[in-house]
Amino acid sequence: MIQSLRSLALVLTLCLTPVVGLSIADDIAKPGEVPRDATGRCQDGSWTSAAKKKGACSSHGGVKAWVGKPPKGAVARCKDGTFTKTAGQGACSSHDGVAYRLDQAKSHP
Image (cartoon, rainbow, N blue to C red; front, side, top):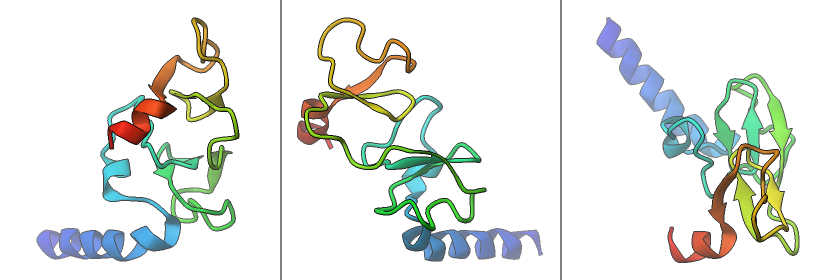
């Protein structure tokens, strides 16, 4: 019975992933890691890569923070998911530090 429930949960996760914009990798990302394609953070702490805010995180308590795609001129992504246009020291200092540089994101999938 327990194995059947686990199998059902896996099937539902795989089927609903495209609907809510999450990938399995997002669910197992280490704390503090921002998935490169994340567009928002859900209330339960998971990340979404949905193209639109409406409906994103619908199975995760709703959207906690929406950042969307990188704005023009952004050079890095902060650990809280926001973007910064500051390239030097202090970038993302109020956002838990730099998660990755956007130019590095393109060259390292």
